[in-house]
Length: 496
Image (tube, rainbow, N blue to C red; front, side, top):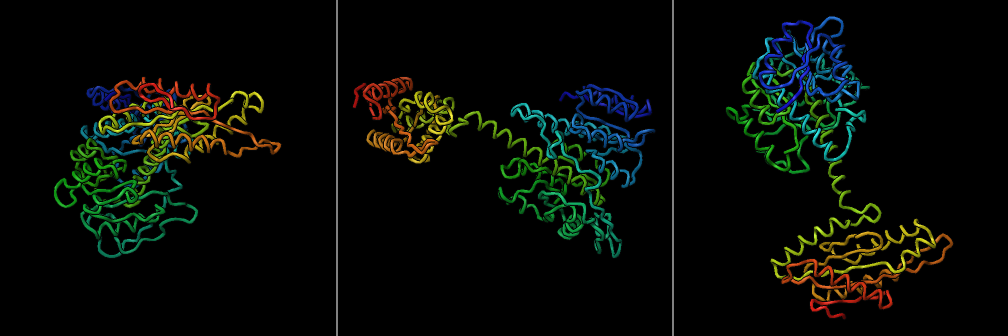
């Protein structure tokens, strides 16, 4: 996987060691010796991932990350901070600044490369969405980059250590105080906890509750696999050894293959120092990995980061869907356009041929439409088109396809219909158009009529073009015969 990595460290030896590891994996590497230099390089563009030392003179890694996140030009670049310190407070400072992950020195090469691969995959998916949809970096927060949760948006947990500790949790479960100042809003999103012990899940859900508007749900393997589309969480926290060695990893793979949960982010919980399985989890598609003991505030930050990414991905996916829809929809009438209509006609014809069922075609043209535009203006002409389109929707079935071919010309494709039924539909449309009550600004009624040509695409016909030629001739016959009428031409080119 190609990628351009920026290594930021004030110690030259550290930069060289990291460069050797990444270059050996065929990544393109750039170097910076300070946070300020890193920001300047990132702003020039082309950087895919930043790996930065946490403790540097002048500007720390956390401070540089805050600057990167505040700039729309650099806010979407993944940042991994590196430190020799094991203290949770150091990780929290970096995560609250917007870092995507932390690596501890000496850096494990397997974990490093797996994390880089994971971040590059996410970045490529995002770019792919943007290129396909033409939607240019409208972030979750409207700033143009990946939304990050600012430090002030994170609740402080203020956990009092009373009573025996629960295995796997760094805090005692007995009491959780001062979870969130009133001015700090919780974030939206569904989180599900799939842990080996229900008790641990309940304690953790309580500790995390103040970070999310919806309290995290505790579930098990069967519950996760039984989720419906409306119940699917945005993020799943999954124990790698759920009900046996690596069963959580298998569950994650299964969930990512299912339509209901394939877009959910997965965060995998691992034992301390298990870098090999951390790499495996990331390569299997985990969005993040966390090691025990679990620290509630750090976990909240990681989950909130995944929620922000998920929301951004959902927005881009929706934008792509809208773009695809706009590519096949006529923006004025809301009907399908010519390209979609003719493409679907081929598919419908193929299906009906196999079932030996005919397809009815009705080609329609608004009478004297040019004079409407010339006399009353294009806004009135647009009203005529939109009202005609609505009449067509109201007088056809759900399985029928009506499209605007262009200008004032429309095509209705009616599968599984007899010639008599198609003739009846065409006549019903003609009468409904004639009965439209369209008023001008002075209150006068604007009469609108339509000419319609009808033919049948028979199962035995291999060439769809012949049927289209017939229906076009039928429409010409309706217009030349006085307009506001229906003319049918059958497969033998006989007019009715």
